[in-house]
Length: 547
Image (cartoon, rainbow, N blue to C red; front, side, top):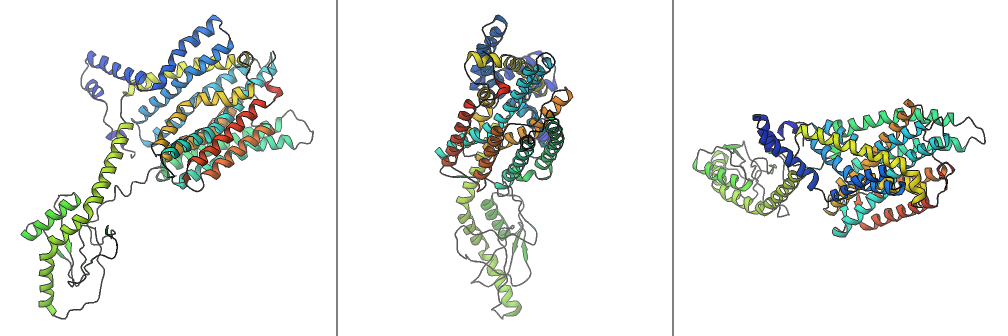
C-alpha cells in the first residue's frame, strides 16, 4: 500500500451515501453498523462487563483489590478496541501519518497509566515524599515490564504458536536488525544512570547526577526515535514491507529483455539472433495467431508486439514480451540473403507452436502463483476493510480514551491497597501484571499472526512495541515528569537493570539467524517465567507497602 492509499481507499457504502445526501436514516444505519463493528467484532469485548462493575466498586467501597482487578479486566478490551479504531483512522491517511498514529496510540494504555501515576505522585510530593517515590517507581517498573513482556512473553508465545503449525518460519533480518540496534541503544542509555549510581563509592548528591543524565539522554532518545520513524516510514520503508517484487514485476516491452528461468529446468531450447529483430504486428494471420497464443499464455490480451529473432533451427530463443532473452551464438549457415530469408520464414511458421509450448510449460506454475496472490490479496482486503467513517473514528477514539483514563486512575489509586488485599508483592504487580493487561490485545494478535505463518507481522508487534516503549514512552515519561517538577529518572537498581539487559540480549540473539521455531519460543517463555519469579521475590524498600 502506497502513500496514495487515502485516495484509492473507498469509504463504506453508508459513508458514500452520507456524502451524497443528508438522509437521517442513512446516518442511523451508519451508526448501527459502526456500533456493531465496535462491540461485536472482538471476542475480548465480553470483558467489558467488568467496566461498570469497576465503577461500582470504586464508588461504593468494594475494596482496592476488587477495584484493581475489575479495572484491569476492563482495560483489556478497551486497549484492543483502541488499536482497532486507530487502524481505521489510519486508512484515511497516508502511510506516514498512519504509522505515526499507530506509534502514538499503540502504547497509549501504558502512557495513560504512567501519566496518572505521575499525577498521584505530584499530589503527594510535599505531603508524603515516600508515596511520591512509590508512584514514580510504579512508572519505572511498569515500563520495564512492558519491554520484558513484549520481548519474552509475546515473542515466545508467537514462536510456539507458529512452530506448532509450521516446522520452521523465516523472516527478513534487515528490518529486525534495525529494531535490535535501537533496543541495544535504549538498554545502554537506561543502564548508564544505574551504573553511575553504583560507582559513586558512597558519595551522595541526592541523585542529582543521575537525574541530569537521565533527562539529557531522554531528549536525544526521543529525537532518535523520531528519526527512526522517518527511516521506517519514509526513506527505508521497503525494509519493513513484504517483498512483492515477484507479484508486481512490470513487463518489459523494450529492446532489452530480462531472462526468466525455464520451469522445466535444464538449458531448454533457445533461439539466438542472427540479424535484426523482426516485429510481428497483430494484423497479419500469423501475427494474430501469435498474439492470441501469447495473450493466452501470459494472461494479457492487449495489443502485444512480439519481438522475433532470426536464428538457426537447432538452437532457438524467442524474445517474447520480455520473457526470454536472446543470446548470441556462432552463425553456422552461409546461405546469404536467401538462406536468412528462409530461416526467417521457418521462424514465423514455428512461432505459434513455440508460444503454445511456452504456455503449456508456464500455465500450472503461473496459475498457482496467481491463486496465491489472489488469496493473499483477499486476506489483505479482509484485514483492511474500512468500517468506520472519519467522524466515527474520532468519536470512538475520544470515548475509548476517556474510559481508559478513568480505569487507569482507578488502577493507580488502588494499586497500593490491592497489593495488601490480594497479597501480591508490589514489584510483581507493577512489572508483570500491569504490562500484561496493557499489552493483552497485542499478545493475542501476535499469536494469531504467527499461527497463520505471518511471523514478520508478529515480530513487528513484539519487537516494534518494545522499541516504542524503550525509545519513545520511557523518555516521554521522563520529560513529562520534568515539566511536572517530579524527579523521575532512569536509575533502576542493579537487579532491574540486569533483567532489562538480559531480555534485550536474549531477544537479539534469537532473531539473528532469521528463523523462528517452537524451541526458541520455549526459551523466551521460560526466561519470562524466571523473570516473573524473580520479581515475586524482589524486595524494594521504595515499594514496601505497610500492612
